Length: 378
Image (cartoon, rainbow, N blue to C red; front, side, top):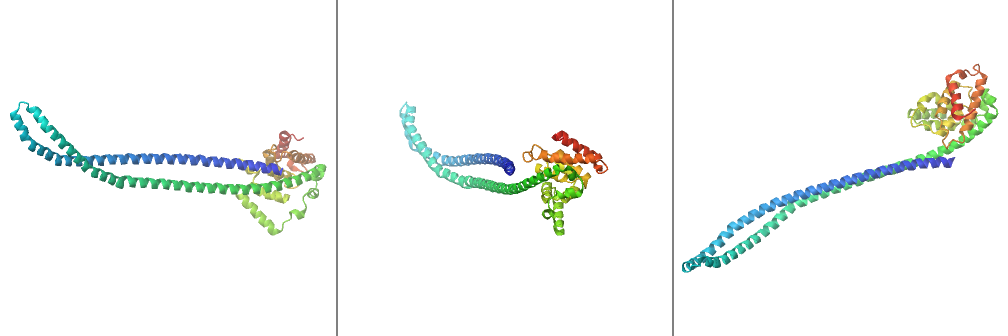
């Protein structure tokens, strides 16, 4: 049974851990995709802005440089050419009827030469201006924008890394807590298995003598665990009661009932049942008590019905209705415990309301009906 309990707990913890890892991976991928898209968008915006600035500044510089060069050099060159060669052309014109061909022959090469010279000077004058324009644009616009973009990108990477490390540490912390909880539950399950085996032995002994089990208090207490095993001094009892009250206030019912059941003391079981409403405990979803704890509670409450019968019947009714008989942890023990309980309740019913007034209550009849109909105990 211990292996089955540990296997069950490991499967539960593995499924929870896998689900948590899957969730973290999905969130990390989504964040990475989002950050990548934001970086691409930011780089595109920066490139568009830089291109626009470069185009405006280059056009302005070219316009200014070309204008200055053309206004400064071209009139001077053309004027000199016309001044030097116009008389010759005019003289030739007066001496020949083919003046048009002569003018073209003399002026065209000069104009072409001077245009080429002016263009070369213009280009030579533009080169320093263009270089200065590009240098100033890179220094004042592109480099600061690139540095800012890189700074933001590294800030995002650093924030993502820190967030990932924090989440990773949180996952490891949860895993450590889960492992510790699983180890604790394994110990509790082992102890419950031992207690359940002991209770089953007592149940078999009580089933052999049902009259003694339902009869006098001395006979019921004779089947109880030895006083040395369950005795507590007054200080221990006060500390135990205070711890149990705190657990009940925090609604840690599993831990509280496990502590009480481990004492194997019916007085403490009755006391904790008086401190809390059974309907409040068993109506919670998901259930707050595991199947082994519920079965152990049923067995100990039904062990002696000579005292606090009304309280025990109420708790037994709700516990039996909440019992999951198909749970592999308790499946082999349920028939024995419920058969023993049914035997005791039937003996009480035969004894009548004079000895056990509770048999006339609706809770008693509901309990008997649930045991017979749901679990097939006759």
